[in-house]
Figure 1 (cartoon, rainbow, N blue to C red):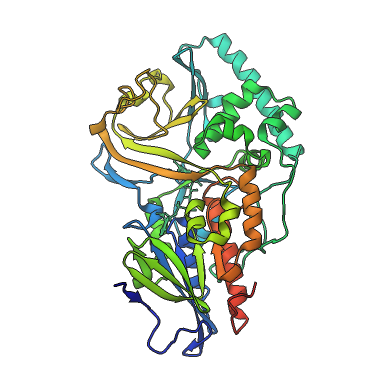
Figure 2: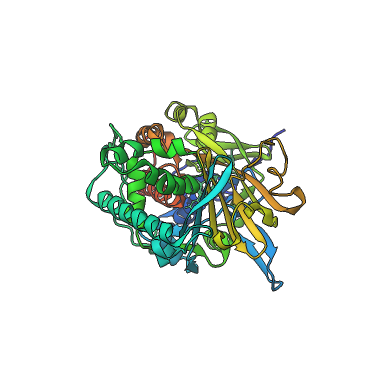
Length: 488
Ligand SMILES: Cc1cc2nc3c(=O)[nH]c(=O)nc-3n(C[C@H](O)[C@H](O)[C@H](O)COP(=O)(O)OP(=O)(O)OC[C@H]3O[C@@H](n4cnc5c(N)ncnc54)[C@H](O)[C@@H]3O)c2cc1C
């Protein structure tokens, strides 16, 4: 027998327009507690006022809040316990306008991570470190890779700097075809004043989207430069293979590059946990349902019921999906056809203490972020603090691809945590799926907020931008009383 939960007070009834203490109570189910789900719940709850009270419920299939679920704690050399974000949750000035505005409004502390980078590649089964990047200190301040003579280093540096400058100028003056540029600039105050968000442009449809590869070719940016630097870096950021980045909308890369040029890359000083605490602060804890994966959403008159393994939760006016696209298509078939071409990939992230993971590098070439760029994707090892590493996309460098320690690179008993993440692949198909979903958003009061549900790279900024759009749509409907479930 299934249990039926309803957290409405005894004063209120099942109708989505009835009032509680003269307030209109709008009950919203949010499926998924990554940053998109948390932000949606936070914005809506904070937007409650004298006329409308949003009763937001979060449903998460894991037993802890998704945004922090894979993070771990480790002890540094000084015996101090540190919380490690898994996966990395960095955000840059210029691109992450809404993330930064939200974090600021929540009073969260963040700092410039000042990452430095080493770039290596595999050539005839040998690794070669071809560049050290000084990060915010500048392209030319990374240092000379060990084993590279002074003359070759200076020549290489001059050539790289020249093409970097050329690419930077092209990126500023030449807009990619198809005009898919990020939509996070409009009228957001960042203040906790409820839903003061940008508008949802329902009509926007993109066509003739230029791929990055074609853009680079059009402007004669040499392939060695794009492969070794641009593609390698974006493979690491997007945790995908080189072919995916080459096929991705050029605007993704050009927008990110121009917006973050010379800007700081931040991390939260007190880990993602500080964001989780602040975002759930206004919520009623009884309405955070952990270990409660949504198995079905069922239309029940004008409202929705969320069916979970632990029972049914009833009388929701709105349902917001904040999960990977595959889950949404299964739970809500009207969105399935828009989502069927969207691809995702799975990426492994290990936090471990095996120093051998960087044995492919000369000790002088180790930097904070060590990228091993392969056509199948970039392996990235972040030196978190001495002796503790986070390796994303760990790769076996020997022929023994079946070995369970990545060919002697990461021993099993040195692994502190192992996680696999599903990530949406940014492609033309995704752009079209987002276009299509935008026209379906809010039909039957069902919505999607997620990192991939916007016009930029699949990153945290998409979570906040899409959460705002959804909150905007819900609040527009809620203020017009009475609510009609079918009203768009
Ligand atoms: C290795 C890696 C590194 C990254 N680094 C960065 C970075 O440095 N900066 C950056 O901006 N972005 C980064 N990203 C991307 C970013 O982390 C994600 O895009 C973002 O966190 C996704 O947030 P989301 O809320 O859309 O979805 P998710 O975080 O995937 O949340 C979805 C939640 O829904 C839950 N769920 C799924 N199905 C159900 C169901 N049926 N019922 C209930 N719950 C369900 C899941 O358990 C999950 O908790 C990285 C991603 C990866 C994989």
